[in-house]
Amino acid sequence: MDYVKGVTFGFMSKKGEWATSQAKESLRLMKEGCGADHVILPIVVEQKTAQSTEIDWKGETVLSDSEVTELITFAKSIGLKVILKPMVNISDGTWRAHINFFEYDVPCEPKWSEWFASYTEYIVHYAKIAEQTACELFVIGCELVNTDRRDAQWRKLIKEVRLSYKGVITYNCDKYQETHVTWWDAVDVISSSGYYPIDKWSQELDRIEAVVFRENKPFFFCEAGCPSREGSEYLPNDWSLTGKVNQQSQGKWYQAMFDACQTRSWVKGFGLWDWKATLYKKEEANMDMDYALYGKVSEGIVQKFYKNI
Image (cartoon, rainbow, N blue to C red; front, side):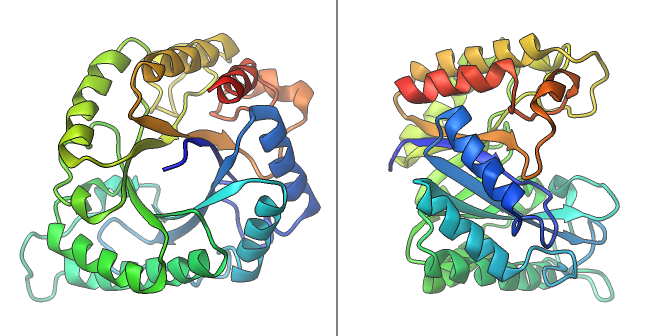
């Protein structure tokens, strides 16, 4: 696979937000500022609770198909390759990793079969869009930790996706879960969320390396990032960590990640987290303690790495 010099763009965007001139200008600034050659476009939909079996992917606030297609077309027009990534969030704030049901069907209780039926309909819809717009890669799921053990149902979903999308398929497992997915052989590329502590990269790459070599598949970090917050370099997956804004914490984390990954030729890139569709003013970057890269020390670190890799 091509090396992915990628950034995730427009997470949590609602209907209409990708159709604006501001979003297109933000995407252009992302390419320029980070030196990116790929963009990951996440379409985020919701289900009500972790035990709901209906995914509301046709809801009023969901990005319209026309604006998704339009942004993909624009991205390609400015030289970006596109990775389309449908995602599920939970309306009550529970993290998607906790979507879960009884192992065996029980009458009157929500069932895995019902959830996968709804999820498959959702994913196949966007697989068709990915095919129509010639997206370079399609992500069939993200950080759905409790679903990972449902081997047969994921294999069935992948077969359905391949009927509609002829390109490269990956699944974005969560951090620390690379060794637990049993159906990596069914996808084309292994990917995961690389939110590892600044001082733990070597040991985690050792662990992931064993999976990559065993499966003999390409690998990249479909997500990887760190908030610009004091102490976040040691717990980059905790977006709610309290502390002061600290761009250096984020910058040190990025440099450590890139340095560690450069020693592993099997790491074929990143989908860095993240870049907003609607940007704050550049002079306000030092007030932002989120994962955003725009206007921060880390933007320059990313650009240097991507241009030299």
